[in-house]
Image (cartoon, rainbow, N blue to C red):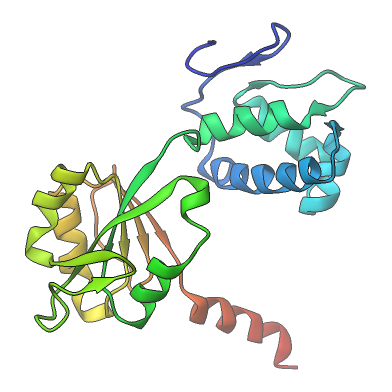
Length: 221
């Protein structure tokens, strides 16, 4: 155990980092995904050039990103695929289970509950909330839908660390306020709004309409 991260080689120096830029942290899951592809192809070692080719990044940028968190490989040898993947997953906290609460069980919310990609990566939707009395008390994907008024109580009861917001824009800020009051520090936002939250609360927005609108810039001519 080295500074909170497990390593099985003394040559590797793994360290947590509080000064890594947010953009670097956001790229780490991409490294984990690509390393999984190399692992599936039975590759034992991978170079920064190979990683860069897959991610459309320069090898120098990849080496700089990883340097924020430690020394993972040796010059001329590259990185051990399995080991680097395990270390990055540990750095990201992907070596444990995260309990998730979903707010909004309309069509989008139901699709999120049914999505099979969360659980294998350690994200377990353990509670769902809605404001519609006709939905409260029903079961969606094996999860009982609770009233939004029960967010604070349920967060404590089920040890929920992450919230997913899938409500209309008009209701979103009040939902964010309720999550913040309940102590949630990480929120995935599907609502088309820019919420007001305290500085220590991390919000990631998912808005396919904005993505499409940015792409049409390149198509309009």
